[in-house]
Length: 233
Image (cartoon, rainbow, N blue to C red):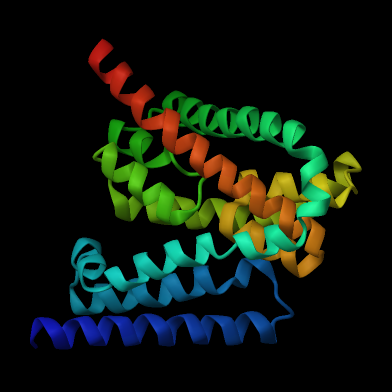
């Protein structure tokens, strides 16, 4: 099979896997644990294993999706603009929350993984777990981390965050849609933001803002911090 044919096959298979996952998600009343990112990824993992295609080769043939994913993230500026009148009064508290939330999310994951004896490769892949996929992959490349592992960790983090958020809101009594949006955007990035928009446009707008700020802030401090620590040791 030629390179072009392989690329077209993988792009088509990815689209089909996502559509099948989306159909299942809708038929199952939008249960988070059946999110098309998870089911579609599992289907593609089975296909790549059957065809003996590595993730690096798959990504090389499907760079189009990287570009579209970046555009989709930027497109979240549209709902932000529509809900800006709700956001502008809280930009200060939101920024502080995002900075501390992003730091705590990263430090907690790395700390627990280190205590459990996680390898250096695993720690590098875990580091950008709480930012949206295009930014996480960019950070992973700067850290020379395993981008396939990072992608899996990011997707798992997003789905787990969106799945556990309703329970966390009930336990803590957190009912304010703005606060819920911040929690989802910081901890569950793209999946959480999509879930937030299904709940409430205000929740979605705050989740979108939190996701964007968390990604930008993490992209600024994480690579520099890891490089400094690496030089120090």
